[in-house]
Length: 510
Image (cartoon, rainbow, N blue to C red; front, top):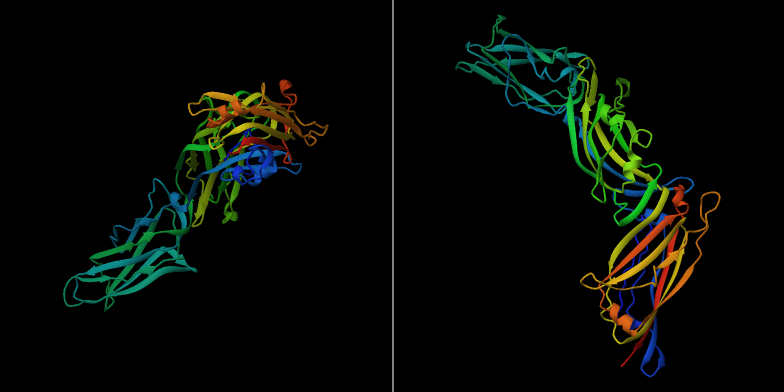
């Protein structure tokens, strides 16, 4: 004979949970008479506090406590992360760059997009190709005035050897330019070569080219373009109100925080196209604020702060938005459409920088301090129950010992449902058991709740009826102290719900 219960009341963050289930066949039988026995079955022995729930929080959900133990529920998520490659991606050297004359200026960046003043190469190699139709060796000196390292201009000497057939051709080995600095006023490199025959006579080459394998930098500054990074999706499934059925919440100070870590030495501004909150009833409400319209400018490091990360936190709260009103509509999730704009004003006179390891990250968090009131809130939870193995039951007496540390009255009832969802019976008589609010002290905290004991009798006929049940629906009605006046109360880390539930089963043993 086996009785399995799984009983849980979800009330915002108030939770009953199982310690264990017991196989009645393994318990000690106490004889009452001919073939009649009683068995004491412990079902639940649990004390769940807010602090314990915090320790067990996983994923993007957490509970934070201040120095006094006041609780705040946090939901957060990273919505966008961009590295240097997003601003200035590596440029593959697909085609060779022609050097038309002995002095040729070649634009290597899009002038419409960038105006690069300084850049330090990293992971880049170059090579040259030369051709000459004269049947003689040619000595070639190549200089790039805009490219320097340790105070020296880039300069290389090559020999184009005549090999008996014309034209002679030389493809140089790859030359690393890692650590070499490009400094330019017009996105260009100047290729300046001198080609001379063995007797010193100058000559113009028939072909001269330079090829990059890839253009990459460890550092770059100048005007680095206007960029839009779009983020669109569902950011947070809040979940606070999943079990809510009716009644009202009034949280005093919910917040949505945008946080940005920015290592780019560039202006970055948020552009919030949409921040839409959907309630558990399906109602959608837009977050309204002047900062939704104007955007939010984020801090960025100056040239004296290269390598540092500047962090900006911006909070949408009741002082600058309608968040309190819409959050008390029982927000289930938050959908967003946010752009991060780099160089938002497209001002080409603004000189900025990025380094190879620069990045920026945008995070969005929902913060709900557990300060507020709850008025006639009804929540419910449906759980599986299995009683089919209980045979030859004569009667059962359930014993519930409960305690409540919260400043909230809780009325609890449980309903047994069959496999069609039809209500068969209820566990407690009348409207259910009342867990009175703990005594509230002048400091705003409660005294430990006193234990309350309830006995519930099931005769043979009634137990046989619930033996067919497949679900147990727990319904709780909650009122914080002074909720009718919207008196705001804090929830503290030591608040908890105690529940001990057991049964004495009288049965016949053949």
